[in-house]
Image (cartoon, rainbow, N blue to C red; front, side, top):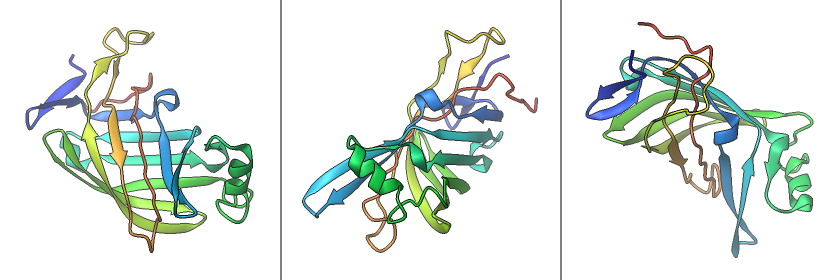
Amino acid sequence: MSATQIVDGVDVPVAGIWSVDPGHTEVGFVGRHLGLTKTRGRFTGVDGTLHVAADPTASTIEVTIDMASVESGSTNRDNSLRSANYFDVDNHPTARFRSTAITMGGTGGTVTGDLTIKGVTRRVVLDVEYLGYARDPGATTAPRSARPPRSTVRTGASPTTWRSTAVACSCPSASSSRSNSS
């Protein structure tokens, strides 16, 4: 059985439930510091599920981000970001993204969804690019176990909502408990 299907000429993973591989996933951000320089950071604690439908545009994505896992290259800045002034991780330990719509055209597309940070939910549209598919050579489950798409996701929202926000992720690896509807 093949772990991929051809959709609009693109080889994509078969329908099923795919888990985000935290070791190959990154959620990052770029912010302005004093309006002069760009400060980059990332969250190392990311977990999620991609429910791939037979029609990929009917798929859904859910991601949870451990806000305390923020890393920006400065311990003082990271502690400030974790404080009540920014992420308030004591009261809001996680952020969540849940997709509401997916569009695609060839290897590009958009994922629209609700991003909740500190209890505030905003609708965001992420431009996505499908970078390919490769079998996981280290898989210990079924002989044709696979690593599904790696994608790059970036978004820049208006200054009145998510200021200088950018998100990048390499999406999921097949979980050993992946279900398949066929």
